[in-house]
Image 1: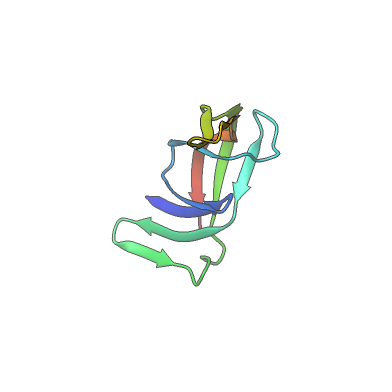
Image 2 (image 1 turned 120 degrees about the vertical axis):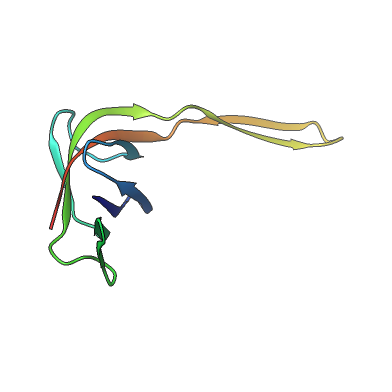
Length: 103
């Protein structure tokens, strides 16, 4: 069984027991979160596709931690003009363990 969910402007394929990293959610560590933007639910040959969401479907997940992604370096450079700018960015993220897909 799996589902396609949307959170943080991105889509994820999830199954029960899986661990995923999503854009930061304001939920404390150890709490449960209910993800209700479910686009598709598949259980074997039974596939339910939402238009755009599947009615009554949700995904329960457990927050394992709040972290930040690895650093991305942004470097701007213009040749022969002595122009150099270096920036770093670490995107905050939330680590979730998928508990159940509910219909």
